[in-house]
Image (tube, rainbow, N blue to C red; front, side, top):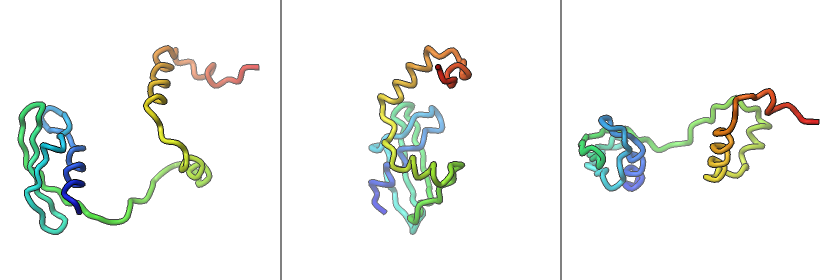
Length: 109
């Protein structure tokens, strides 16, 4: 497993003191033994340092757990990813939405 991947993976965790994510440049690999990796992390937001020991296993992807039917899953599998503009559109819609779902989903004749 590449050290660059381990650094990126550990940059997804948050500092236990201030809650900010660690930056990749502030994750240092100290060493590993089989699947057990030892790293040092530094939080640039609050200055906290920590040692992290993590078991990181390579292997097959986890099974997808969903309440979608097989047809629904297949339909959405090849859908385009949600883009930033999509998120902004729904944000703008919700800012002015009064909460009347009944009216929202009723077909207008």
